[in-house]
Image (cartoon, rainbow, N blue to C red; front, top):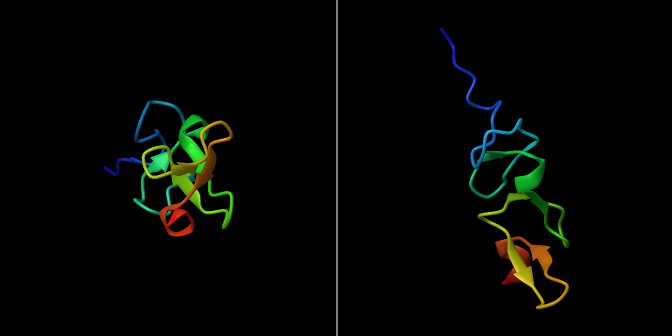
Length: 64
């Protein structure tokens, strides 16, 4: 028997949408972020933000 661990979000029970390119977690629409500079798919755990009001999502490489 084969179990499909990729059909549910790693952080909740919703259906998946993308794979985080930093940690490899499969995440749903609510937990997916795109780096504003390079377009990398990230989960809400791996994304960093720049700015206090605008909070631009960035990956670790682009934020550095």
